[in-house]
Image (cartoon, rainbow, N blue to C red):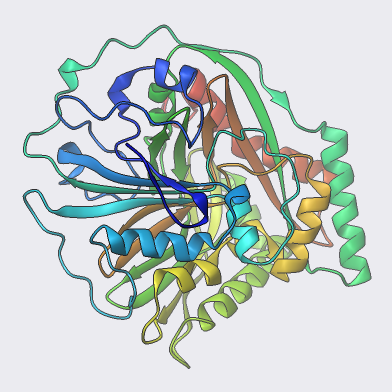
Length: 435
């Protein structure tokens, strides 16, 4: 069965179960397809942010999938859909309430693409998507299943093969885009723009084990997977896009990267360019939160704290505010998506430049993915993220460009960020894993 909602969007009950095997990806036909409902025990849910104690006993109750071409407001649609399925997120300024046990609704996965975020910000979204099967909004409501998952009942994984990666732009084209951003900064069009490149590789076998491995990478605060009919997303993100707990708003922008060595850490801490780039994004995030916060409550708890992700040091800050009275999920998404650390400043001008310079869309990357429940939101920014359609795996990586950026260094930084992702997808260990 399927139900047509406003804007012609279909809600799909129990679209995909991870134990259905590789055929689900190979034969899926996108968000309009209706697959068989779950059969047997609930599969273990690995959505980033899902309560650890519940993951083995969650079962999908309802699903909403939406593409940009469907029209309408994805933020409002998500809030309305959740409310219709027992998850009212109309006032996030109130303290969170514990989720219900037994067979009640527990919470929901929420995914919003970078293109959907740009759409909410009023920016152009004309770049072609390399994986058009992926929806731009997915909301999956989960309840508790009376029996835990039975991993032994799943079929054995097929042999895994991953082909060579084909980049969406050459190193020269990437470097030229960096030069174009620097020229725009010189004209005063932007202060900073984040550039992202894409690559794809053919595969054979079931991609889900490879995508699940990403969630185990060191520093993957938002490690996990989300699956649909004909697509799957694997996330190893360390970055908090927005967290709401007991009426407190928190974002943790990451900007500034070096190799995870003693010399790399010292270089990152001493870099005036990296610090200036970082502070610009912190200021942008402060402004984003100020739009939805109680007046005078925005503060920076940490500034330029160096933390590790895989083989990289990264600079992270923590920005906090108290939610304005009556703040709902839709307004929260409109204010924070897409994340400032993957756009630039000013945000809309940077997004316009991104749309003009990047040859393909950002797909599952640079968006939002996480868990929502009554009074609680925990969404990661989908950096360090890969996606599968029925034929290829996709990865994205990039970095922020300022006036002081060196084109060759920016190309090298993007390669360093995507290297652990590609190694993990191929089944190889990173340097830190071997220690």
